[in-house]
Length: 107
Ligand SMILES: [Zn+2]
Image 1 (cartoon, rainbow, N blue to C red):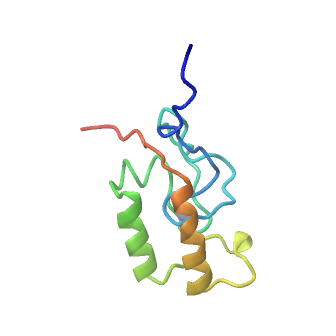
Image 2: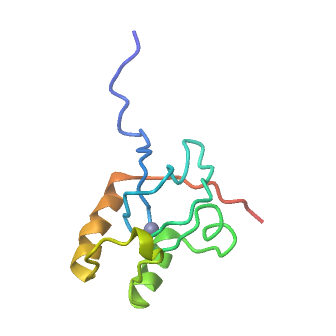
């Protein structure tokens, strides 16, 4: 009989931005094979399938730049009524819920 205790390698495919933790994405940013949605995160502006492969910026690197540049919420229409460092840091905790494996084309 197959063991059912194989959960530790399970990918968590949620509509959460792996850069800033924004949890109201329209789609899951990377599917189970690592293919990107090409959605642009309303919050940090990371484009899944472009910022990663074209700009060659990883999630962590982009996050540091975004915070250092004032963590501007890109799409004002999606911005919560209050947006500040405290709320941003709270949102970052969502990152731990996901573990995407983006498929980056190698040169
Ligand atoms: Zn984001």
